Image (tube, rainbow, N blue to C red; front, side, top):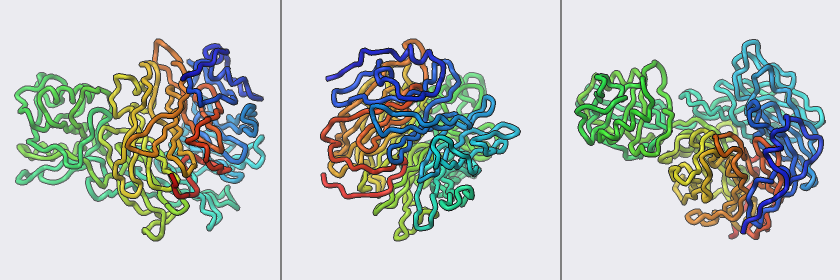
Amino acid sequence: MLARSLIGGLIAAIALTLVPAAAAEPVEDAVSTFTWTRNMHPLGYSARLVPIGSPSIWNSDLAFAGKTAYQGTYEGFRIIDVSESENPVQITNFTDCVQGTTTGNQGDIIVWRNILVRSWNSPAPSGGSLCGGIVTPANQEGVHVFDISNPASPVGLAFVSTPCGSHTATGVPDPANDRLLIYNSSSSGATACRGIDILEVPLDNPAGASYLRFEPSGDTSVGGGLENLVTIDPPSPAAGTYGATGAAFGPAPSATGVSGAVVLAEDGSGNNQGCDAFIGFPAGAIALVDRGTCGFVVKAANAQAAGATAMIVVNNAPGDPITMGGSDPSITIPSVMVSLADGTTIKAGLPATGTVRSNPTATRSCHDTSVILGNVNLAACAGGNGFAVWSLDPARGGSLTDPALIYTRTIPGVSIGHSTAFTWDGEVLVFGHEPGGGGEARCQETSAVVDKSLFFFRAATGDPLGTFVHPRPQTSTENCTWHNFNVVPTNERYVLVSGSYQAGISVIDFTNPANASEIAFADPAPLSDTSLVGGGDWSAYWYDGRIYESDMRRGLIIWNLSDKAVSGAKKLGRLNPQTQETTFPFKG
């Protein structure tokens, strides 16, 4: 049974200018276009409105300490008193991370005691930029450290530069050494950036925050750590194994791969770029084409039409190959890219046979990194076409500052791994991805099933346990993927709370990962019926008995979920959503 609020209207609200709220607004203003299940109850609302057509100064991720919520924004961050769920009150809207038209997006935050750490995700302009009065040097990215002991007046303390930027950051408390560690995820696809940066914030001197080291997310000795491999068989003079990137379209190569003759495709234009129908191509072969002139999906479609079982694209510029962009659900063959140098070598070794397959020890760009401490001590990086898992336990060769890689996993059809979370007993790992980068309508009835899927794995081994497909088809004007989520801290069920952009909030019971089901939702109407407009839930998290929804254009919305699945949930008193500080056994 569904309920719909009839009061107010979002369209009228977002027509207002962006004005920081001094006090809570009627929650009906926020949810006037929502549809929700009867077990969901909107309680409170603190607005930070981002009108359609304004600069992209979104609301982003959330953190919590006591009765205070911290909401990242592309301009800075907000601090909100949530001691009364029906009346959240903004303490400050800190906007001093903007200079000219440059913002330090996306503003993901970590809170620990009186310290707030914020990701700066865009290279600072020439001449540098400021955030909290702290200089971000020209062309650099990283994290800023703030003193929030006076929440009405945050003070910038330090900037720590990271070599490949800072897309997201994860707090890893290390009380034994009186410090907060930061696992920084750059989300950069460059091979040298595939992993996590480890930073240190001394609790007695947070202004002395510093960079410690880089931890790769896989084995760089095989195929340069790239996620796919192209193997050329003897007696070809090009015999050997070459690293390759993948594609945002079509299936990812499997572990066993596709084998056959490797044939340089000639198209109707008399070149090897694959932009026209192939001429004389033998069906069942692997197509080798050059990058350039037309889009990657065009090349893949022509290769598929010619009967190719896979496509290898040779880069047309020196350096690492790139992940190929594009979207075409009709592509059913895997596509990979090799470097210009490797492609030239392979061409010189033709005719030849070979194989295109995934790299089981691949490195991957870490988009988000999750940590569970307590008795489990694992970290998981989601990125690229899957995820990697480390042990932080000295008994398994790891530590907080030197994680030991256990395994990496590739998921067919996934190209932009986004988030992971653990069950509180550490048994199950939840994986979500972001096809289209979060700006596309990937939850439509006609969208590929993999684009709408959450995945469940055995955390210790990476063995698959099940999937869950988003059950509520969205329109072609709504950006939608599984985005930021967390697991409710209860030992009676496995329950996930997720934000999915314009699909809103989903609450999933995955106690049986092979048969997960949605038990609650709150879904807003499209922001536009005529064009694709970015918005919706950046995050939706369970914290101390409430669901907190960070809406990119609306602000913070607080919900109550009345359902026996969460009736025994524990209160934590603090939550950095990618950090689970403790564990407890599952009783079922």
